[in-house]
Image (tube, rainbow, N blue to C red; front, side, top):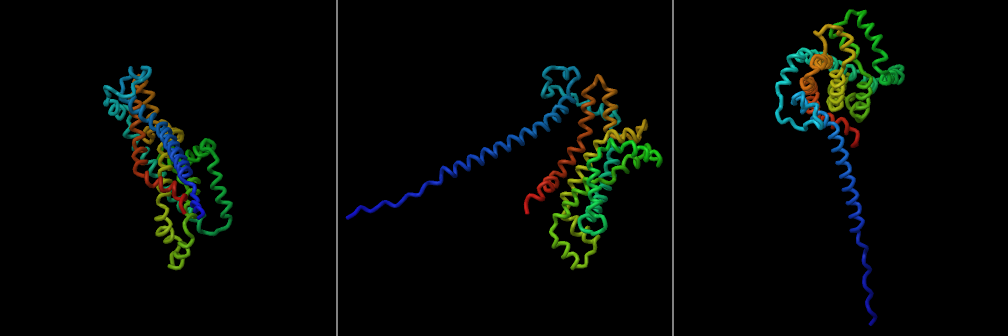
Length: 294
């Protein structure tokens, strides 16, 4: 009898699977290393500012400086708050920032809705003009803005601090893109239900665009809170409406031999920003990843 032939054996896919798994793990490790490095670049200066604010001034000159305060000087924070009048400056910054953020969101929502859903003459031309404002540095227009504010009698007032920033081309562009990403079937269904433009905006568009609006609010808050040049020009020598960034500059000028007090004032000034980012963290992530999944 002829010997029966052995059945052919299939090649094992194990080496190929192992190779792909190894590549995936290497890419994952590389991503985590890059994210860790980026996090350290952001966190280390903040950590050093907090540590240096708790050191004795003589310790700041040590090389290398201490990386952890063995005898923290907690009194630097009340000293910075009282000697730098930070309470008044932070209040002024909050008033300025709340006005700018609120009205920037209102104007951006209305303009973005018009550019996204309405039809009117020169629509594309006007939108291009809006976008072109993003390429004009603020320093180019500061002289004319200051002249306009002065002619209106708004120097040393919160109107002068806030009115030039109540509309933003960036906000209009950001929200317009978010509105255009909504399914067109929603607009058609709203029209069939008898919704006008206002009801469609308030009951459909805004609830679905909350993450992007929250992101715009955070960006607007950061820009308004960190303003230095414009508040300095508008307030003149009047400390009643000067903001926290000017207060920090004055604190550093009056505490030349107490650098730790100046750093404590800096830590106090950026605490609202940290709190804001923690509160709106989820909305920021959702807004950044909104277009990644269809």
